[in-house]
Amino acid sequence: MESIKQIQITFDCAEPERVARFWSEVLGYVAPPPPEGFATWDDFDRAQPVEHQGPASASCADPSGVGPRLYFQRVPEGKVAKNRVHIDVRVGTGLVGEERVAALEAECSRLVALGAVRVRLLLADDDNESCLVMQDIEGNEFCLD
Image 1 (cartoon, one colour):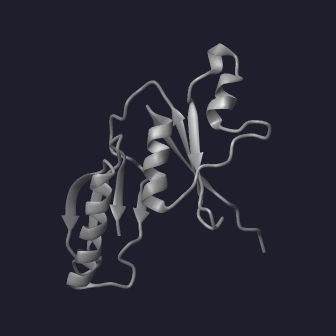
Image 2 (cartoon, rainbow, N blue to C red):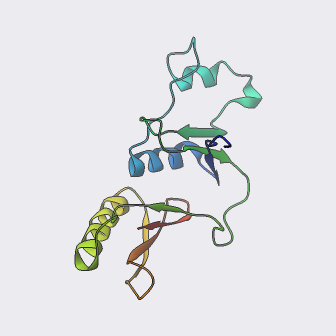
């Protein structure tokens, strides 16, 4: 039997630290500690050569170690098309009908306060339960499912 591989999900973005903070709040993730010998990430950044200073990337991880690490890397270009891969934030698991929609709406309100954008509610049909399409603070699509 082959071993199970861990994955990391990488986001291209303009402001890695800002997007990492957003997703940390969404998922309850935490930032990694700074490298050994540095009290803060700012201290580490100031120790780098001038041409490498500034947040070129950031990350956050599930404090329980179960979920994938999220990595955010600065890129010069902006987002121009729909994501080919997106994250489903599972807040309605096991819920159906109005109870599910209420859970999705409650989480949507919390995330809008963090800077997310509500796109549209997709109501249940014969094949799928309801979900709510949203965008993060840089326009990346994700669903509340």
